[in-house]
Structures are given as C-alpha cells and as structure tokens.
Image 1 (cartoon, rainbow, N blue to C red):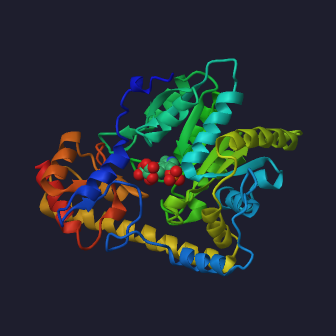
Image 2: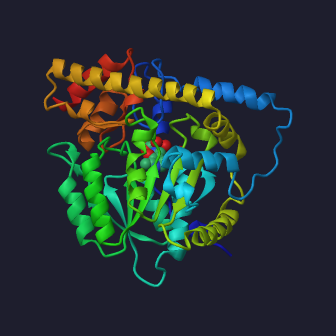
Image 3: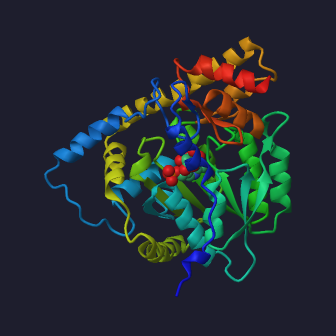
Length: 408
Ligand SMILES: Cc1ncc(COP(=O)(O)O)c(CN[C@](O)(C(=O)O)[C@@H](O)C(=O)O)c1O
C-alpha cells in the first residue's frame, strides 16, 4: 500500500502562482510584469509574423503527419540549432565535436544535461554545481532532482546594481576543483546584468585553471543585444578556448514558442584525436536517457523553428521580428527610467537602462513588491524582477506611479 496520505503538501511554484494570481485579478488596471514572456504594446502575447508564415507553410505540406520523431529529434532542427548558437563556422561543428538532441524546451535541455552529468561526470568523486546568486529558480530543483548538490557564486552587486565580478572570480577560484559552473549565456535572468567580454575572458581563465566544467543556459539569444551572433559571443569564446561544455538552448522567447516546448541540448567535447568517437559515445548515452525520459520530443515547435532557421528569407524575417521585440523592450526601459526620474522616485534608476534582455532587477524589496501588488495590482516576482515586455504605452505611467508609491 502506498499510503499517499503521507505525501506532504509542496509549496506553490512562485512564478506560476504569480501568473495564476494575475489571471484571477479583476482590476482593470492590473499589470503583469511577472513571467518572462513577450507581450506587444497592447499587453497581448505576440505570435511572430514569421512563425505564422511557417505555420501556414507547414499546414500546407501534404506529407505532414504525426509520426514519432527520432529520439534525438528533428535532425534539421538540431543541426540548425548548432549553427545558431555556435556560429555556422564553429570549429566544434567543423571537427564534429558536438552532439545535439532536441529537448522539451530549455527546461528539458537543462534537465537532460544535469541527468547526463549526474551519471557520467566524475561519478566516483564529490561534484558540486555552482549557480549564480540569483539565478533562474528552477535551476536548483532540476539539478537537485538528479542528485547533484549545489552552491552559488555571488553575481549581483546591490550597491552598483551591476555585476559583482570579484565575487564571481573569488568564489570560482576557491571552489572545489572540477565543479560544474552554470552560466547564463546572455541576458541574465533575473538581473539583466551580463559580464563584459573582458570579464568573460577572466571567468574563462579561472574555469580553465580550476578544471571546472561550464554549463551554459541560453534562453534569450537575440534578446540581449538584438544581435544573434553577439548574444552567442560568450559560448563561442569558450569553444575557441577549447573547453568541453554543455549548452541548454530554449526557443520559448526568441521564437515565441513558449507552450510548444522547442529546445535543444548540445554537448561539445574538447579538441583531441578521439574527439569524434567521444562525441558518438556521449550521444549514445544521451539517447538512452532521453528515451527513458520522453522517448522522443514534440514535433510541432521544432518543425516551425526548423523551417525558419533553414530558410534564408524566413531567417531574415525572424531577425526583424526579434528586433521588434528587443526594440520595444529597450523603449520601455528608457521610458520607465525617465518616468521614475521625473517622479523623483527615491533612488537611482540608471540600472533600468544599463541592464539588458527581458528583465530588469528593480531593487524593490520583498515588502515593496507585496505593496505594489496589494495597492496597485502590479505583479512582479518577489525578488523585484520585472519583465519589461509587460510594460507598454498604455500602462507605463500607471506602473511608474505604482512603483513610486511603494518606494516613497
Ligand atoms: C535562464 C532560463 N533557462 C531556462 C528557461 C526555461 O524556459 P523554457 O523551458 O520555457 O524553454 C528559462 C525561462 N524562465 C522564465 O521565462 C522566467 O520567467 O524566468 C519562465 O519561462 C520560467 O519558466 O520561469 C530561463 O529564464
């Protein structure tokens, strides 16, 4: 007998709880700056025009069916995904040192990587995973679920509201040799603070010196700078430096395929004479894990993304759609900073425009976050993160006044 009555109540997921609370709120002025999902200037979800076009093409295909995909997913999708994040001229692709599997979005890729490492990365010795503090909250439970213990490296400086670079370096320097280091490739969630290229080079030096293993999580390529190659710079630099690493790649945001769960996992091995046979063995073990977890990944989102990634005209249109999203977010950053400065809201607000990507780490305290929710029906995560795409011409004045009221 199971005695399910012994199962304890789990806490509600903070983010999905916030989304549900927002949906329940009937106040006409309510503002959702919670979930990291793009909204247009009317606070509506935005189906990228290029995704609509790809959808029409897909539905017009008379050979379209609902057969299983291979365990590793749609090959034209994973191949195109490698080129997108590594660069078409990547030495890792040329040397066939990378293997990729289509996953259940970014979460599935982080999980598959964590599961693989828990089984094969220095299994006989103590392994520690390091996350930035703060990080995407789901990182903790994904890695704990596969039995890997974790610590954090300081990442955000409250004083400068920028990167605590010394904190990063010192902690990685003093971490046990050969730790797994989870790094946000660009548009850090939740802080919107990224290392400069010079700082990335120093971080790579420490990771090399300590024989750490880099695990990149990229969920916002194209959102940080609006330029896909630039947003992939850190990963490409590490590859140039010859690192062996993992990459979890989400297409939720940059294709707006949130609920279709389109993503990819890449394992890159270091240059060596038997790199290709290593990658083939790694691929075989990843396939066994994927088979037991999901058997094979969902087809629709990958087909849409693959059509766009593999067609130069659609790709160019996608880049324009990306600029529409990243451009509107930047406009909202400028507008919000200006409004808060005009209101004389206590504190400085340059970090709203200094930070990049989808989120702003406002600096609001937990009680101010609760206050802005109770008084003004504004929904942001309790760490003070706001998803800039939740703001628009119609609500930004109201939002700025709500923050001003909570902070004063
Ligand atoms: C750093 C990071 N990595 C991976 C993911 C997973 O994304 P998916 O599985 O949908 O591809 C997110 C999404 N994080 C959120 O945008 C966020 O609001 O933080 C939200 O979708 C979430 O799941 O929490 C993320 O921010």
